[in-house]
Amino acid sequence: MVWNILRLMLTRGLTMKRWNNFPRIEDVSHLDNVWFVVHVALFLAYLEEKSGNKIDREFLVKRIIFNSFSRLILSDINSGTRDYILKVDDSIFDKLEKKAFDYILWFDWPEYLKIDIRKTIFDNTKTLELSIIDASKKYAWFMECSVNSKVFSDMYDVPLNQIRHDLEEKRKTLKSLDLLWNNENYKKYLTHIRRLSHSMRWNQQNRIYPISVMSHLVVITFISYIIWMIENNNGWNYDIQDLILRTIYHDIPEAITGDIITPTKKAVEWFEQVLEQVEIQMMDDYIFSYVDENYKAEVSWYMLYPFEWQIWHQAKYADILSALFEAKVESNFWSEAFEEIYRNVKKKVNMFWTTSVDYMLKNVLDSFNEKWIDIHLGR
Image (cartoon, rainbow, N blue to C red; front, side, top):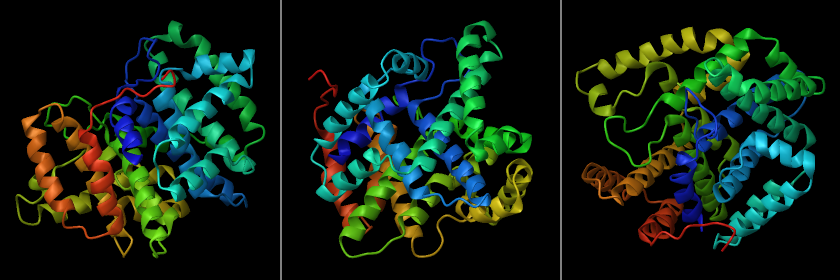
């Protein structure tokens, strides 16, 4: 069921740390990595389209997020070890991942969700999109590795050289990666948005499962996908690409401004309006100054005004539902603070009269109370 994946995302997805067998100066969770890969892929897609290629961005986002589910089952097979496995047997990892996906799709999903997820995971016809995804994963690995190598250089020599070699080879066939690699401003843009992995939600509360804003964006994007599928299966015609782009981009300003909580924003008259102006100015200085005007025009609305027009309701519902599930996970560990947060958020969610929200409350939220059964392929 959907709840299995969401609960794994909000537990294993947050506790699995990248480069776990290396000394490191930053901790990047599995979900942090997924979001950054998505964002690099979307940026490369923009560069490809500037060169005249048409890219299926909906496929990019869905494929990266759906593929990440297998790691929630397989757990800690790190990227470097995976590459060595592929050198020894280039088909064995595909078999392992297929077993994980078959196990995931064995869950009691609505059939139309199973069909779409399976189609996305096993569609290998979109060669340019798949090349972008592969390059985006390697660029994310490179960023993680290069940051840690600044302190632990000896430890990271081998993986850093391997990843750099792979990227050099990939640049020969993927124009967008070559453009990125040769443009220091583009690199700075991606470096700044990586700050979201250090911006923590509920920062004033103790957490069993601390979640960054970056990881949160993956969760709400998956929830927005579920909402879209349910609503469109019940007669609506929402634009999934527009919806998931709103959820993927909408908290990026927090990488620059930090997360100022709503009660503080509303504490003094006009303070919220001042913060809106400050956010725009800081985004120009720290983010948009590194990209061209066309890219700014394309994404700034999603970053600065994500909850506008009719579709914003669905994106906002996904955002609040994510907060509800995050609070539920913590309240299950008898956190009094999160029990209160959970009750308050649930009151808000109960006011949303949609088919998809009703499904999430009845078929997902209540299941978070069920006894935890560890999920792995050995069962």
